[in-house]
Length: 152
Image (tube, rainbow, N blue to C red; front, side, top):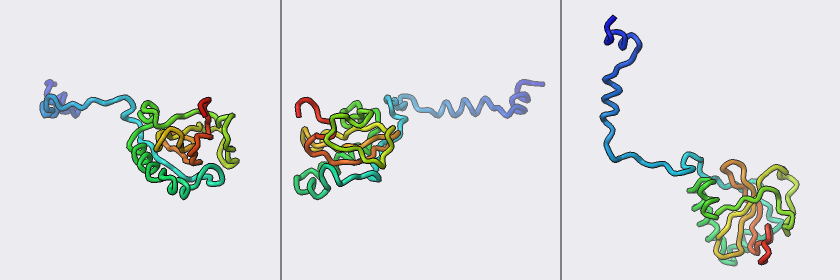
């Protein structure tokens, strides 16, 4: 059997492969960055606890609510790796032992707790936990008491 007939029988066509490769335009390749294939971050308020920390109304009065919304929009345009590298999200792991907050009983013990940082100043944080690419907001922490540092 000739080579052409063998290719036709196997369903391959060398000309198609060459023609699609020749259609590629030189210099148009886009480089992928690390973490590009990760899904973008999603924000959830399903475990919101307004019995601790501040309320949305308090943050509105203190001029932080609009800044928080701007930060959440920014975060939702990033993946977990990028947000961590840029210092926007800081994941601690277990609920901080020295926290001034109490872990809500309805939240599983095996979640990775963390904060969203840089919301209109040094202290203001949003505390919650992260599973995969979803950050679950639990507390508003204007005074940085969720995971206090030695400077507080």
